[in-house]
Image 1: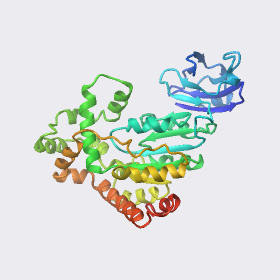
Image 2: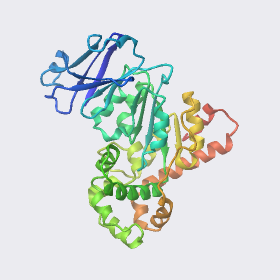
Image 3: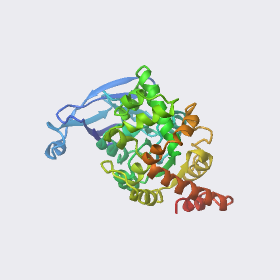
Image 4: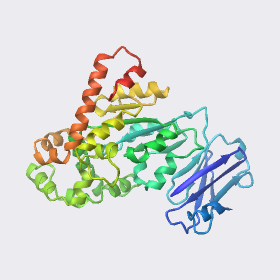
Length: 362
């Protein structure tokens, strides 16, 4: 899916959207804050999209005006979403409630920090949690949205692929890293948990992300180290690729690249370009720094959650040599980052946020 907003003049909102199937005519729903829902089918022919081969017929544009929504000029906020997926295409920014800034939180942990995300997203008009569940074109459109003044995105967003867009659109770029072994423990527990639960939009997204691993994990007894070792030894090449060093893969390798030790140094160089980098175990330090950079206290130190029993499973995984092999690059990367943060904060606790920010990962 690709989309963009061309103009919001108050009484008129125009733009376009191309679905994954470029022969389909897109449909939208407009949600107002007083509970109204207005449905709209593409009503503008876009010759430019047709000529570029982006859409088979060119009927991919839209115009929303007072004929459709009489009080459009006076609406402080409304949401335009793609009808089938519900993905927000545009939401008018209300300066009294929304931060006029763009922030991305890159997190590689298995479990989405739902409590944290809900609190942070409330400050922004456009909200894209777990953005990595969408195709590359959709991610690029969400991040490259030039008309939005207030956007928050999160997820395992590949830095080598999308750093250019993030930097050109002046995003405040942040990242929180997890202990690799603890993250693997949460990943295994989460897969078992969601594969047994009733389907929701969140569990479906998580299952899609880990679909290749589900058969292997379901056969592992997480209370038995021998069963864990046997299950990990039996992973296919595709399964190993998915589970191997996800942090290094996110910050130091392209999506189609096989992670190697050299990607650790690339990841460190890339992390050095970001505005705020923290680790889960010292989230309070990250929150203070990120809030200072953004200028709004949106990250709360006590908002981070963990799966019950993950620490115990991590201790068992730490005894298995194969786990260290699977996470070799991430263990090295995390060690460098954690040491850099400890050094920076240990020697600069009285310095201001900006000074500490530049000490991180440098």
